[in-house]
Image 1 (tube, one colour):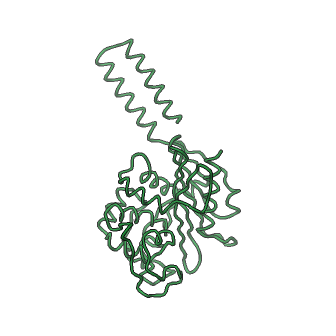
Image 2: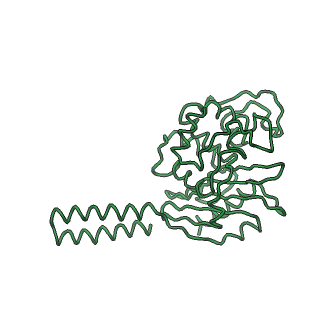
Length: 300
C-alpha cells in the first residue's frame, strides 16, 4: 500500500510540473521517469523481520508471510527462510495444478485403482480420487499423475513458475535414503528438487494472485482441496498443504504452505520446520503454527 501511495504522489508531482512546462520533450521525459521509478518501487516489496519465536516453542524453523496488498514480506529467521530444502508433499499443490490445467486430472473422473500393494498408511490401500488423494497425501496416486505429466511438461511448468532449483533430474527419487519403494519416491521427496520457504510464498502468489496465468476452473478446483475445513477463523479462509520428509528415519523437513483470504485480501505464507533433536517435529505441527500466525496476522 505504501508503495502505491508513493507512486501516486510521484505521478501527481510530475503531472503538476508537466502542466507548468508543457512541451513534448518534457512530457516524454516525465513519462519515462514515471515508468522507471514506479516499476522499481512496485517490483521490490518491503521485507520486515519478525520475532515469532513464541509460536515455535524452541523448534528449528522459520516463517514467511507475504501481504500482497501491502507488498510486504514478514519473515522470521530470514537465513533459514532463504535456504532451499525438499518440498516433499507440498509439491502436490504444483503437480495438481499442472495436471488439472492440462487435463490429466479431471476431478469428476479422477478415481485411480489401487494396485493391491499394502502401504504403511491404511488410507492409501484403496481406490482413491483426486480430492481424497490430496487430502490424504497419497504418494502412489501422485507418482502416477507425475509420470503422466512427464519430464518435458514438468520441466516447462516449473521453469514458468520459477519453482526453486527446478531440478527434476532424479525423476524416480533414487536419492531418497528413507525409502526404496519407487511407488513412494520421486524427485520432490528428499531428492533433487529444492525450494526455500520464501520461494514457496512467491510461487503461491504466482498461482493464486491477480497475475495468475492459470484458468479460473483450475484455481477453483485446487482451492476446494486446499481449504482447511477443520478450522474456523471468522472471516478468514486458510488454504494449504502439508509436507514432511525423513532421512534414515528422522524427520528433517516439515512444511505447511498456502494462502489465506479475508474478503478481497490475500496473504501468502509458508512455515518450515527442520530437524530438532529434542522436539517432535512434524508437518502437523508446522500446520498448527502456520494457522496461528496467519490467523493472528489477519485478525490483528
